[in-house]
Structure formats: C-alpha cells, structure tokens
Length: 255
Ligand SMILES: Cc1cc2nc3c(=O)[nH]c(=O)nc-3n(C[C@H](O)[C@H](O)[C@H](O)COP(=O)(O)O)c2cc1C
Image (cartoon, rainbow, N blue to C red; front, side):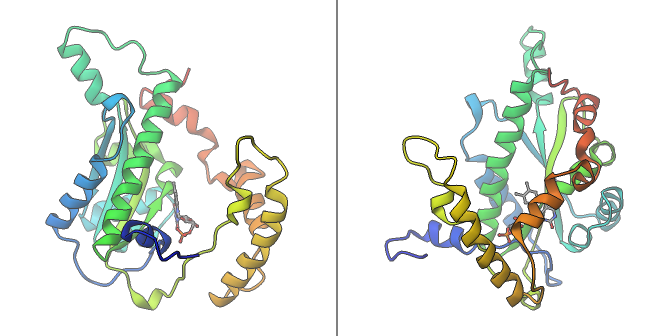
C-alpha cells in the first residue's frame, strides 16, 4: 500500500526487489564510494564501527568465490561484489595500540554487535544503490564457506564475512516483481506480543505468495513449504549448521 504522504525514501524502500541479473554496464568507483559512504552513516553500536567491506571486481576472484560457495551466477556476473565484514580486528588493534589487551572479542555479544551492525550498514548500502538506479542482492551464501571467502579476501583474525552483496545495473529482462510480504497485522504487535496474530496473516500471505509466483511463471509455490525447506532440517542450511566452528576459526569464540 503506497500512501500519498510517503517520503521519497519510503517510496524507494517499497519498490525494493532483489536483482540477480545485470546489464553489461559498470558500477563506477564514484558510485561505489557514495554507496559505502551512505552505509557508514548508519547508526553503529557504541560508535564502535565494526563494519568493513571488501569490494571485489576481479573476474577471477569473483569466480573463485562463487565456486567456493556453491556456484552463484549473480556473484560472477555482477560488476562489483561486496563482502560485508564484522570487523573487530580494527578495534583489537586500536585497543592494543592504546595499551589494552582485548579480552571480550570472543563473547557472543560482540558477535551479535558485528552481525547487527553489518546488517544495518549493508541495507543502507543497498538502499543507496537502489536510489542511484542500481540493483542488487544480499548473498548469505558467503557463509556456505566462510573459511574459503576469508582466505580469498585475506581476512585477519576477528574479521568475519557475514554477508555478500552483488550490485549492478538491473537487467530489465529479469522481470522479477516486488515480492509480497506478510500482512502488517501478523508483524506489527501493539503493546504486547500476540502469538496468534501470525495465523490469519500467514493464511492471507499464502494466497498472495502463490499469486505472485504464478505471475513469475512458477505457480503452486507455498511460503510455508519454503520455510520448512529452509529451516526444518540442517540440510536446508546448505552447510551453515557448522557456523560456530566457522566463527571460531576467525576468532569469534561465541561464548
Ligand atoms: C541476509 C540475506 C541473505 C540473502 N542471501 C541470498 C543469497 O545467498 N542468494 C539469493 O539469491 N538471495 C539472497 N537473499 C535475498 C532474499 O532471498 C530476498 O531478499 C527475499 O527472497 C525477498 O525477496 P526480495 O528481496 O526480492 O523482496 C538474501 C537476503 C538477505 C537479507
């Protein structure tokens, strides 16, 4: 639902769709820098600024990353592939330079800070990119093989690749629409959590979801089945059920 009073930012947000196919057109360095600058302006826990981003343009490097995470055309074909890093390495160095021994980096609270700050910054980046006429998609698949991605990017200890982002000029032939979301009534609770609110919302959503995917040429899709496929068993996690070990390997002990 678009309201007449929507701001330009909200209008942009409501048009969001993941873009996985790109024209053979560049994303300039000037655009990249504006996008990362906008990302950096996001709020950050205690102003710790635990976010770094590696911009990968090299075709071979993109191909190696894609292969390591199971093969993703959008990683290989996007003119720029960003890897968003929860980066406590910089803060560790700052502490040591100031004469303090970093003792808490492995605590799960800091893992959460890293993941939350990365998510906030990365979404700011995607919105900025979309406002410039670009499109992109988050790539959680970097966590299918964080060890290989970390090695490929030369990440130090305490730097963890949380999520990737393929960016480019959208190919209009891709033809994806704006994917519906759960009705607001199943998501927005007032004063106290209503644990039954999801049920009518999910029912209504099943119909919206089915209708949307029918327009995309894949009728018969179900959101509930998607949830089951992704979350019910470890198989749906594409190898990510060992994330604690992957975090540990980068110094996030998650205790
Ligand atoms: C953290 C995160 C990781 C994601 N990882 C992937 C991914 O690895 N591959 C992919 O094709 N889409 C990925 N997506 C995109 C989602 O599938 C997409 O946002 C969702 O289906 C809703 O579609 P929409 O963005 O077009 O509205 C990811 C999204 C998020 C937020």
